[in-house]
Length: 141
Image (tube, rainbow, N blue to C red; front, top):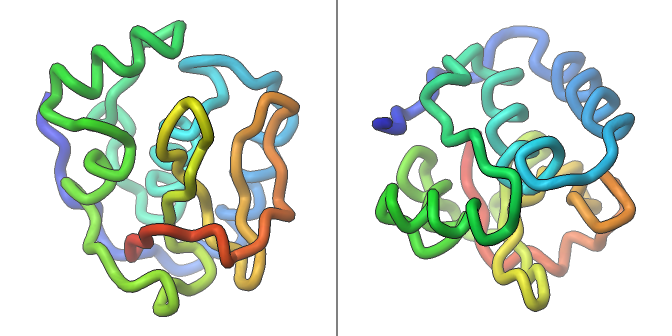
C-alpha cells in the first residue's frame, strides 16, 4: 500500500464534511470501524474525493492498528498524516483540516478541526466539542 497525497477539496466539501461526521457519529466506536484513523481517512476522502483504497484498513484491535502503522513505516497517526498531508502550525488550521491531540495511553489521536472545537473519537463515540487548544499538530486538507 502506498499512500498518496489527496487532491484539493472539491466544491461542496462543507456539506460532505457534515454528512461524514453525522454518519460516523451514528457508529459504535471500535477499532477499524470508528477510530481516529477511520475518522481521518473518511474525512479526507469525503472532502477531496481521494480513493479510500489508498488508506490503511483491516485492523480490529489497537495492537493490530499499531502493527499496521509500523509496517507502513509510521510510529503513530501523526506520522501517517504527515506522509500525505502538508503539516501546518496548529494556529493556522481552518475548518476541515485535520489535527493530532494527545490521546492518553493510546498515544496521538487524529481529530477534525471544526473552528474553535475539534471532532474526535472517544470510547463513547464521536464527539464534536473538544477545545481547539488541545491541538498538538495540524495538517491542511
